[in-house]
Image (cartoon, rainbow, N blue to C red; front, side, top):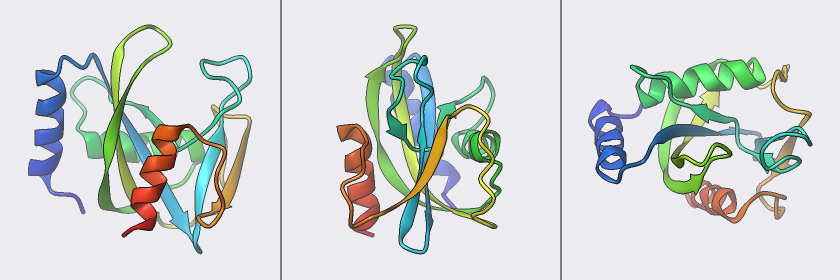
Length: 146
């Protein structure tokens, strides 16, 4: 599991940098592939493929948010958080300065994926060039390097 001191330092750095919204993202890996979710067409950045991710709620730690968001968006249960893969900043649909913290996670069972907020999902080979933003592509590159 990820050390609490790292998670606290990441949240503290974001506060220092005046980040308004903390977000967590999960690289769910299974059999050499990663899980990507497609945003609804009528949503912010509609149609793009992304990692399971979501906002950190007030009073929630990064690891708690990660476990909750993966469960909410995919129905999958996290067995363990393996590695911190870095973060990226972006402006949210509501105009907030946001920072997404990304982690490699193991799930108890990779199927079935039960979508609640996305239109589709795919297990993408890491040898392919996935149809994701440059920021997510960099996170996947870091994941491949471990």
